[in-house]
Image 1 (spheres, helix red, strand yellow):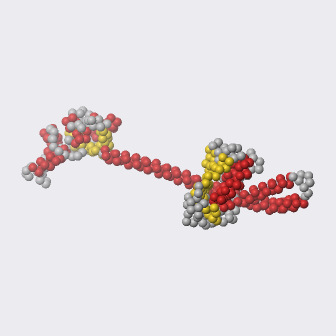
Image 2: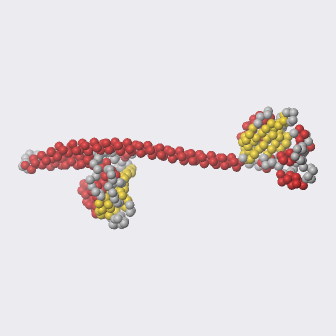
Image 3: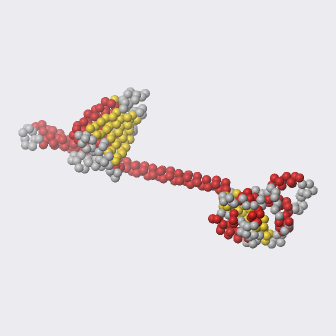
Length: 435
C-alpha cells in the first residue's frame, strides 16, 4: 500500500470507468496481465477502485483526504478534484443536521475504529439530498504503521424509502388493529353488560309473575264477593255510586297483575296468517278513544305489503293479538307524550322478509340520562299522572317483540319527539323454544 500511495499513479487522476477498464483489459497484451501467483501492479488495484459502484475514499490519520474515486460525482455532483481540495472532506457534502455526528465518526475512524452501515443524509451540489450508508476500516502498511482509513459510501435512498413506507404501513395496520381490538373489547363489554341486565330482568320478571300469582288468588275472591254484594244491594243505598269506582279499581289491579304475568310467562298464542291491513284498521279504532281524550291525531301511513311465495298481499304470519298489543302500547305512549293538536304517525313498511313498524310522535322526547332504562320493568317517567306510571308497558312490549324474534329500537331528541321502530319477521314459521 505504501508503494501505491507514493506512486505517480496515486498522485494523478485516472479517468477510467469499469467498462473502459474491461475493454482495455482485453486489449492488453497477454504478457502484461499478471499471472496467478505473480505480484499485481498498483495500477490494477487503482482501476478496480475507480470502477466500483460505491463511493470510495482514503483519508490519512490526520483526516486529510488522500484519494476519492469517480463514483463521488455520481453521488454528490462534486468531482474528485473538488473533493481533494476540501479541507474538511466529506463534511461539506453531508446534510447540516448530520454533520456533527459525521464529524464524531471521522474522528473515531482516524483513531483506528471500525464502523459499518452508518446512515447519513448527503447534500448534493444542487442542494438535493439522498441517503448513504457509510462503512470504514483502518489501513496500515506491511510494518503496521497507520495509513489512515478507507471509507465506502453506498446509496440506500430507495431502501430507506421502502423502510419508511413499511413503517408507515405498519403504523397504519397497528392503528387499525388497535381500533379493531378496542371495538371488539367494547362489544364484549356491551354484550356482558347486556347479559347481566337480561339475567336481572329475567329474575325480576319471574319475581313479578310470582307476586302477580299471589295477588290474583285473593283478588279473585274479592272480585267475586264484590259482584255478589253489588247484585244484592239496592241502588238507593248511600254511596252506591262508589261501587262502580271500586269495580274499576279492581279491574285496574287485574290489568296490572296481567302485565306482571307477561314479563315472565311464555306466550300462549300461536302464530297464524292474517291480513295486516285489517289488523291495523282495528288498531286505529282501539286507539281512537285515547286520541280523542288527549286531542291528538293518530295517522296511519301504510304501504301495501308485497305478496311472497308463502303469503298473499298484506298478509303476515305472526301472533295477531300480541302485534296489536305491541302497537297499542306504543301508540298510547306516543299520545300521552304529545300535546293537544300534535300528531302521532304509525308508519308501516315491509319487504318479503321483514315487517317494519314505526311510531313517531312530536312530544317532549326522552332525556338522554333515562333513555337506556325505559325498557326496564317498573321504570316510568309518568310520575305526574294518577293511575299511570307502573312502568310495565315498554317492558312487556319488548318481551312480546323479542318473543316473535323481532327487535325494538328507540331514538329521541328532547322537545323534538320520539320514534320507536319495531322490526318483525313477516313470517314466523316455527315457535321459539324459549320466550
